[in-house]
Amino acid sequence: MHGVVVKDLVVRHRGAKDFWQTEPVNFSINPGKGLALIGANGSGKTSILRAVAGILPLTFGTVKLPENTITILDLNLAFHPDFTGWENLRLMNACHGRGDENLEGFEEYLAMFAEILPWLHSPIREYSSGMRMRLGIAWMLFQKFDLLILDELLSVGDMAFQRKCQAAIREHLNRGASLLLATHNLQEASMLCEDAILLTSGRIQTAGKMEMVLQKYLEISEEQGILAKIEPCGNPPSDVCPGLKINSARILDRFFEEAFEVHTHDSLTVEVLVSVETAKLNNPLFRLTVHRNDQIFVAGINNYRLSRMIDLQEGEACICIKIKSLNLLKGRYYFSLSVWPDEYTSLVMGTPYAEYPYFASILVHSDRGDGAGMVSMPCEFYLKTEDGILPFENSDKGIEGASTQTKDSACSVD
Image (cartoon, rainbow, N blue to C red; front, side, top):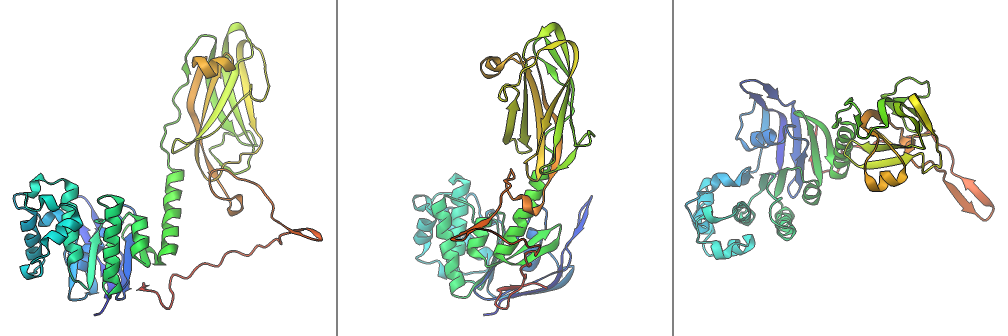
């Protein structure tokens, strides 16, 4: 039994309106080991699987596979809706070039594994999609193979069924079979594979031990998510009740220039121009709220909470809200403003003078020392001893990068 060796694999796709190809891909899988291909949609996972399996022609490169290889990319391709579950088990055998003799006496066992025994002799057009998938997965896991190539097929059924499938695959791996898996299910990948390849637009971005690759993938996904613009800004403020109008609002940096990108701990000023339409407006409440771009409420403040009151006279007024230190960490944040007659009205009545949702967005940049998460927590580390307090030493040394290769790695990538 030998493993998998892929050298300089290039897959090219030429559609009616687009042209796409992978950069040369190299990897190997030792017997008894699993390799996961992970990445965003369109990164090339399925194309590489199909090329390795021989379904897509190789533009360039070589692929060496064990003779006894099973490729499952879409279980529905092997099913006929008018055939019963029992008959479709034999149809799957035929599609994979296998005889019926290895199924004799095991049909009910597979149906029990798939949890469809009462419907084994019913046409699968009467099955739910989950029942069909479970039957196909049961057939797949019952086969003897040296390499299993899978594309997003184990995330069906409930948690108990998924764990049962993972246990069955681990049994195959323990006896020396190999697994090549493309998936978005990171938990599944980490349970079945020791190594992974992170693909981006048809090229290998990172490869090596699963923990290291998953960490890189999560960092990239988080970066894309926290920086994305998902809410439009620039819509005009709305006037709800007579008495006051919001004319404009903007965020200024410490130089009193309009701010669009800032750093954690910067000072900011929110400048609001309003028009008072009555002779005198007694103690209005100005509320400022901040949301992250995934709609999570981050912070809110108003002048009543700070016990700050002011009467406004008829005409225009400029209200400034000083943020002394912005403790938000890296991400995109949206600021909203509303003006209310008083705190009771803001909490109970729900009718403001005016409101200005998402009047501005800012992109916050952070340094490593600012921490992780949503907010920064400035702190110091000390060692408490019998002689007193000893602060940790200051060090500018960085963390050494982990190697993507180890001598006993199950996956080697050039």
